[in-house]
Image (cartoon, rainbow, N blue to C red; front, side):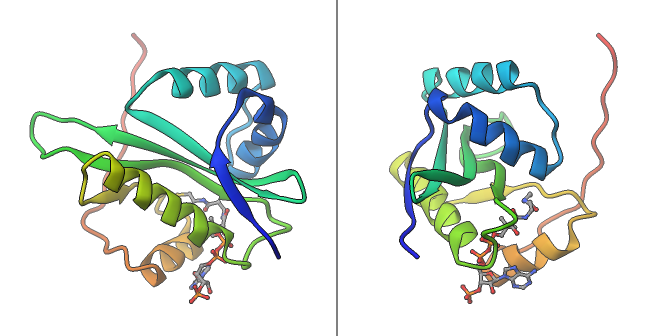
Length: 143
Ligand SMILES: CC(C)(COP(=O)(O)OP(=O)(O)OC[C@H]1O[C@@H](n2cnc3c(N)ncnc32)[C@H](O)[C@@H]1OP(=O)(O)O)[C@@H](O)C(=O)NCCC(=O)NCCS
């Protein structure tokens, strides 16, 4: 299976909309186009796709994070592989891409947050050498 990776493009928006729905977020196509454009215009964000037979079958988002209380680090923001193509090494390939991007940005740490309900995915990350460092709750309010 010949899989390649490349930077995301706004022409990928249709596939990304479908994959993002598989990730659990039913965003309208137009919002996905806008989000891809924002990522491409921001030097501290990027995203990469996995391609098989000219078809986009996975994506990963990455961010260079700056916080007062931490040394700069790199963070994965979104990762999904098409459910027809899982367990073929594509998730691992996208993680490698994220690591490479983070290193090129001068980071030596890659973090990610994963919903506590995604227990299978936790095993995937642990298999790839990620260590759980803490658990969090997410709060939001109207503004
Ligand atoms: C998580 C996900 C991205 C993994 O992608 P994938 O392409 O199926 O995984 P890979 O085939 O690259 O697996 C890489 C390695 O992890 C192992 N692995 C994968 N899933 C595993 C699991 N549930 N438990 C243990 N090991 C696992 C594989 O066996 C493989 O091992 P190897 O490199 O030693 O052969 C994919 O399952 C997915 O999209 N899940 C739904 C969305 C999701 O949870 N996204 C993450 C949100 S934080």
